[in-house]
Amino acid sequence: MGEAVVGLVLGAGLSTRLGRPKQSLALGDTSLLGWVVREAERSSLARIVVVVGDPALVSGLGLGVGRVTIVCNEVPESGCASSLRVGLDAAGPCDALMLLLGDMPGADAEVIDTVLAGRDRSTIAVTQYRDALGHPFVFPASAFPILRSLHGDKAVWKLADQAMRVVVDRPLPRDVDTWDDYVEVCRSLGVVPQLQSVT
Image 1 (cartoon, rainbow, N blue to C red):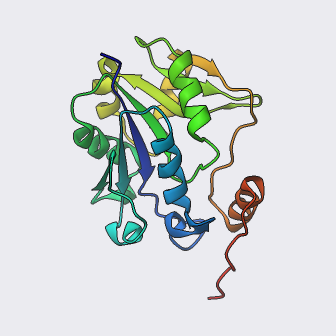
Image 2: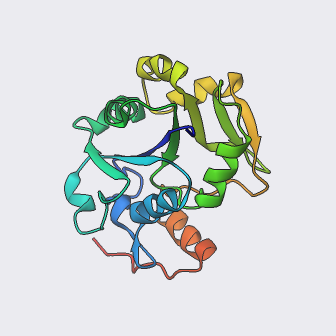
């Protein structure tokens, strides 16, 4: 029997810099979050857990079917660490957990499978892109207690120094924090950005 790795997509961010929910930004025929989840589904991950802060943001996106489970972090303002704990609870028994960002669509199925194939199953792994370290991270089940003990928004980066590095021969994918990020991500993926609403 093969290794069961669950993908955990963090999609509960508050989008404070963008000023609107980035999860629902249009990306091709889906949304930013929908694109990330679809790439995870295209990979060899056994299951995918998506943590959101507002379930209304994913209604109508076709998520939560097949290998995908949607769960809600009731306190998204407390940072990524709380979403990790919610996601771990939803993942249930598994051999490892792959951490994916819901606003980084460039970490696609090929990246996911390259990292899964290149890692040592007994240790934490981080992705080494050409120019920087980045997501996805992979945590074996033995590291789950460490994940549960983390606090804050960038807590997993404290573990990067002790992690194995899996090389992916690409530049670090951009994550979407600002409108300029969104436009650049659309350009890199060959899709047209939606119009920016004027408030």
